[in-house]
Image (cartoon, rainbow, N blue to C red):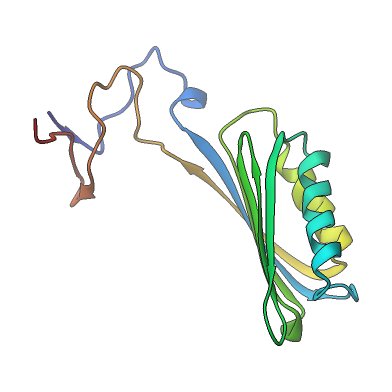
Length: 154
């Protein structure tokens, strides 16, 4: 089955159900916390942001780079919170992704902005999986030139 990407969802399906997830990309500039290269503090802070947002924590994995820098992810039942820190630039790049309605992504963003003491933050919000519709019997393999190909080899 080939489906045009511009085909809209059935009228009985609400726009709320037309997407699979929501994503916030948060850039924290000029972070004034003295803990940007403190692995334990960063991990605790991101886990606490997930808790404050109402997420269900599954696992947290963080890594400290030499000579500096930290990357980590908090896997939540609803998806994840990920962070990458460049302490030498006083910058943190954060991704908050959720597939559920119960996680308050703005709460997590505000919590992290406050705890990292960012003087300037930029937040962008995206919806994910907008072209997936209920009842579609085959998953799209790829999108190219506005055409969806749902055919798979049998």
